Image 1 (cartoon, helix red, strand yellow):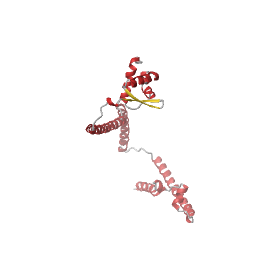
Image 2 (cartoon, rainbow, N blue to C red):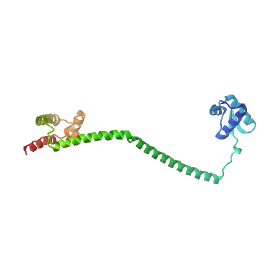
Image 3 (tube, rainbow, N blue to C red):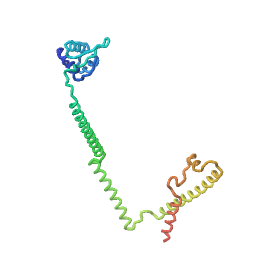
Length: 225
């Protein structure tokens, strides 16, 4: 809702006094757009206010700069300035404390949001109960001596395992012979050459042929005993 024509000066005066810094008519017009005032009306109000001495102005070429009258403001003395500085420092400390408190609340809120809902807890509980029931059933079968793996299946698995270990050992030996031949008279450092070719040894990826071979040997000993 647009203000009455006789209230334009009041609105402009209040804004100039509130901001208390140099302004031109465009500054005031931009700031008071929310009142739906035209720039011509604002310029007229500024001129009327300056002519009546309610605000001050200075001319810079063709442009007028307006500012609130400074004699209407109380200028604090040294003691009052010191008190204001102390109060400002206290407010800054309180602000930091509030920011810290807000950050803690936000952290706690994020933690709560990451927790499972009641419905999710119930679903997970039901799933775990099912898993426990299946595991208990399997354990009971093992206790009663029921064989879960057929002897022929076990034998086939062991034979396949044995074959894979032998293939591993054979290929590892062939590679070592080739690698030793390539690097024996090479001017490059073998480690740098390996990295350049993108080759990884078993130990580079944390596996051991000896360890897997010992597992097979251990199973044979158990069957023999």
